[in-house]
Length: 264
Ligand code: NAD
Image 1 (cartoon, rainbow, N blue to C red):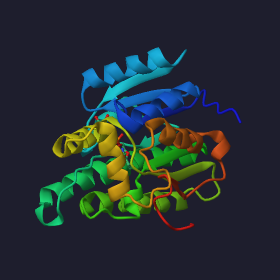
Image 2: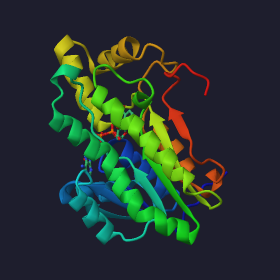
Image 3: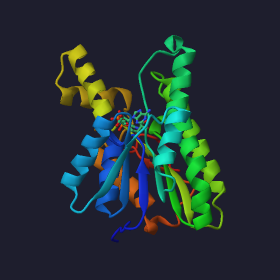
Image 4: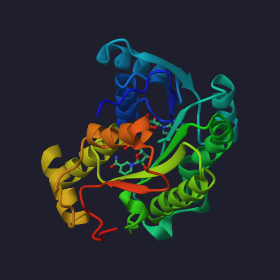
C-alpha cells in the first residue's frame, strides 16, 4: 500500500511539537499540503522549516492561532477556509489531585481539548460532506478509557472527544467522509519529556529510568512496556487520513501498546 495524499489539504492543530509535529511530517511525506498550527508565529515558522528540511518537496505552511479560544479558531478558519483533512491534535495535560483542580482548570481543559475540535469540525465538516470526501481525526488518549486518577479532568476531556467523534461520524452515513479518533498511550513527545525529566530529577533517576518506571508503575498493563515514539502514533494517523482507510469510520483506534485490557 502506498499512501498518496497529493492534492489534499491537511490541518494539524498543535503541530509545532510532539505527536502533532510527527503527524504533520508524516502527512507531508505522503504528499499532502500541510498546514501547521501553534500559538506563536516563531514556533510555527520553525516547525515549517523543520518539515521542509526533513521531507523532500514538502508542501507546508503555517497559521499561528490559539485553538483553545473561539477567537483563535475563527482566525484559523479565516486563514484556511477549506480543509480535506482535519487532525484535532492540540491538547494539554497536567497531573493534579482531584481535590486541587479548580473550576478554571476544568474549563481550560474542556476549551482546549474538546471545544477546539468541536469548533473546527463545525467549520470544516459541512463542506467535506458537500464535496463528498474528508477525514477528521481526534487525537484522544488511552486515558479516555482508563481515566487516570492523577488527572481526572484530562481523562474526562479525552472521553468527551470520543463522544464528539462518534457523533460526527453518524453524520457521514453514505458519504466518503470519515471521522475517527486515535488513542495513544504514553508517548515520548516534547510535552511528556518535560514531565518525565521532572520525575527523573525528583527521584534522582536518569530520564530513561524514570520513563521505564513510569510505565511499569502507572501503566503496568502495558504490553509495550515503554513509551511509544511520536512516529509510531503518527503512522496510525496518516493511515486513517488516507484514501485507503475508506472503510474505517466512527472508530476509536488504539495506539497505546495494549494498556487497555479489553478485546474490543
Ligand atoms: P505536546 O505538549 O508535546 O505538544 C502539543 C502541541 O500543541 C505543541 O506544539 C503546543 O504548542 C500545541 N498547543 C498546545 N495548546 C495549544 C493551543 N491552545 N493552540 C494551538 N496549539 C497548541 O503534546 P503531545 O504529547 O504531543 O500531545 C498531543 C496530543 O496527544 C494531545 O491531545 C494529547 O492529549 C494526546 N496524547 C498524548 C499522549 C502522550 O503521552 N504524549 C498520550 C495520549 C494522548
